[in-house]
Length: 82
Image 1 (cartoon, rainbow, N blue to C red):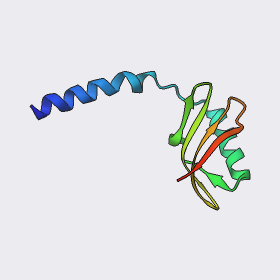
Image 2 (cartoon, helix red, strand yellow; image 1 turned 90 degrees about the vertical axis):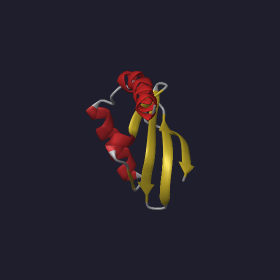
Image 3 (cartoon, rainbow, N blue to C red; image 1 turned 60 degrees about the horizontal axis):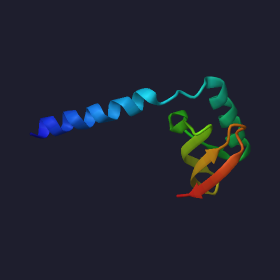
């Protein structure tokens, strides 16, 4: 029974993962440079495309940890302290 539940859970997650778009390397470099100017850094695995912009999870800055949303022009539109 447990194997069936685990298999079903895994299969439900596959389509979402397959649909996720990879952020272009050039954009990741631009985001990292912008964050460096803000005295922040993020692991590139925590940068995701989101509704025409980008979602950054676990951004570490000099004054704490944040989640950030960027628009398509890499401007911060939301910054939430964790």
